[in-house]
Amino acid sequence: MAKAANVDKVKRLRGWVQNYDWGRCGAEAQVARLLALNSGAEVKPDRPYAEFWMGTHDSGPSFLADGYGEGQNVGLKEWIRKNPNVLGHKVLEKWGPDLPFLFKVLSVAKALSIQAHPDKELAKELLKLKPNLYKDGNHKPEMALAITEFRALCGFITLEELKGVLVDIPEIVELVGNASAKQVLDIGKQDGAEKAKYALRSVFSQLMSASKEMATKSIAKLKSRLHVESQLRCLTEKEQLVLHLEKQYPGDIGVISAFFFNYVKLNPGEALYLGANEPHAYLSGECIECMATSDNVVRAGLTPKHRDIQTLCSMLTYKQGYPDILKGFPLSPYITRYLPPFEEFEVDCCILPKGASTVFPAIPGPSIFLVFLGKGTFHIGSREDIVTEGDVLFAPSNTEITITTSSELQLYRAGVNSRFIHTAL
Image (cartoon, rainbow, N blue to C red; front, top):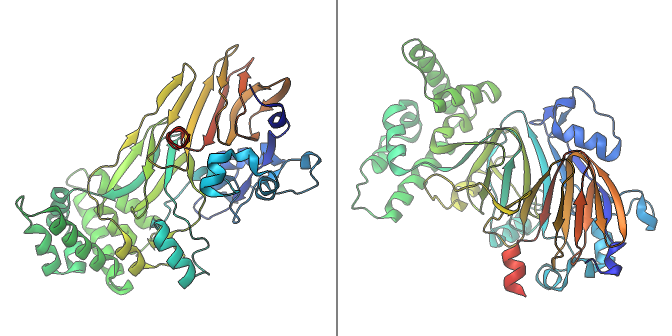
């Protein structure tokens, strides 16, 4: 059961919205819907609503709703610092008086940049060297859990697929040169993984370093060739995607680099996780996202923002092959857990039918709950709270929560990875 001291420390939160230009516009965005429900903010039809943040990161901090007797506009970060025991001693010992995870909802209308997130060592170095670009010294492993069909580019294709690309897409060979292309094409099964990795790194770095003029010219040639060929054959999914990206980011080297990456389509309820130094670009759809508390992004394509191509090409792991897709596993009839291989976070999805109830047991770490759809009641000790869609709640460690509903209720919970919690005990 919830300890009496913690019952009063379950807090409603106001989230933070980022209006990045790739977001969906107006009321069609889940981010906009949640913002309006969560804080009563007016949704502007022509404004993009990209990300809804729940957590303590300085670039988009959550605040206690209505002050809760703590004063107006009290930040969750400030409140946790004054009440560090709400994190549980193992979390406090490992990460200090702050949440180790950042919880988000994304509404993606057009492709995000081709990017990767640095590991801790590189993040600290980048913060020191370029503090105006890289705002914190933390790594940023992340996981995206699809709400709608969700599309992304993620990780490098296999060596055999890459050879096929270099044979089929002459415009890439023009950009990287025959020598770099031959280096990849000549790799045999007897050659080790390191040789393949070196060749991939070489050809990818050549591609991303092409001049703007060369990139624009090659993409124009690719576009006109594919338009001619589309009259004679069905274009592949990747070719169709590249033409779509070209409309969003004309002449951008990221358009043609899409051929190097796995094209991933998640169905609702499937999740994709990304470690440090893995290239990716979210393309379209809406998802729940969770990550370590960081906002470090190294970009190299599909973006009007600053590109740090040299850093990106040098930091990548150059691991090849299709990424793991998580389908989640049942914790109970109504709760599915998504457990990535990162200590900082996990995500639970709870879909509760009319008249049903479920229990989130007390755990020795903090949680954030997002009520996504419907209405229900949180029973915390002797306290009962009506919750409706758009509500966000912080629950301290060692708080058992029973949830009931008279309609249907869909909610998501982010918390510290239970593998860490249990091995740390």
